[in-house]
Image (cartoon, rainbow, N blue to C red; front, side, top):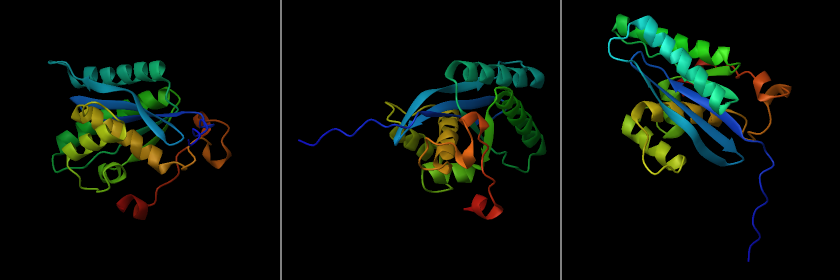
Length: 195
């Protein structure tokens, strides 16, 4: 009989991922301990019918602040804005992203940023993967019974992307930081971002 592997000595690391949107913002907390990944929580922040933009932004800030208080992530990651030809949509998305980043920073979290292509490549292995492929990989990687809603899956993917970009040891802060709260994400060169 093979002896059981010793328990991991590394403390768990929690990352809050955010997929910002002016109508629906996805969020998800993933924890890694050693090589084990698990979904802690996640969901969608949805604008109420009739909400104006300031109300939507306040809802994003407030609900993310509540998630930070409840689930105590160590780090955060946000998907970068995709600039489209629709300037109005891009501005609204930028405002939603700003509200999310403000909530994360207000919660004391270091915030990393990743393009949609980086997230898809980290989770699916292909930077131009379809949304359904991301959802299915999230289901498989986190051993979920069913795939989460699209925006929540995207947020969990952002969290996993960040975990993949951290030191593989995952239990030790980088750069001599005393805790994860003192850690700041490494700079990503334009060449690395294009991969």
